[in-house]
Amino acid sequence: MSRHVRRPAFSRSAKAAASLILVVLVAASCSSDGFPESYTDQVQTLDNGTEVSLVEMNWLEGCTVGLADSDLANDANNICACSYAEVSGPDGIAFVDFVELNNELKGDPNALGTEESMTPAERRLLDIVRGCIAGS
Image (cartoon, rainbow, N blue to C red; front, side, top):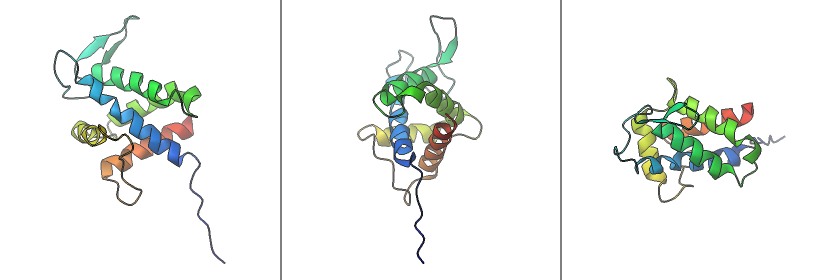
């Protein structure tokens, strides 16, 4: 008797979401202060008085726009906020690895490796996004 292993339905969506939300770091390089050197670099004050780093602001803006035309559109704000908190958190992805991922994905947002060939940072990003999708 053969066993068929079924992959979670959100697997493709998670990979697409991970690719889209990582690309938003590119926009951060347009700041007059140069390219951010950490997740907390270049704090911006929003219209409502909330302070966020340039990386976080670009992540959230780019992520929600990137997911607007997907089946994740209704949950985009929650998924984007959750994924940023996890990526930039203590068990997330080191900023240097985050920038490297961004550089790899600049030209091709679908360039994440296959399940078998992912780097540890790519694997962590995918796991974070999957977890945020599952929790939304």
